[in-house]
View 1 (cartoon, rainbow, N blue to C red):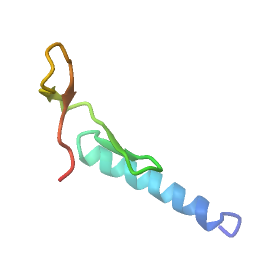
View 2: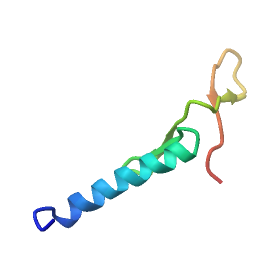
View 3: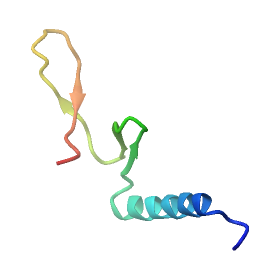
Amino acid sequence: MSDIDQKNLESMIRKILTEIIAEKDGGRTKVTDKSGIMSFHTPNWKPEPFDTGKAGDKVYLKDMVT
């Protein structure tokens, strides 16, 4: 155990917890990049059409965060 530094240990624990949470949440996983932008990968939730006010735009989204 002494061969594993704190950063690697935290990374492994985070990965395991993310997988466990995803299993309990229907496979949904959340990814946050360095800038703070979040994306969700989920097999069960479908995005809904979003009206941009411009005809012909094909924009879809789903609120996932409150």
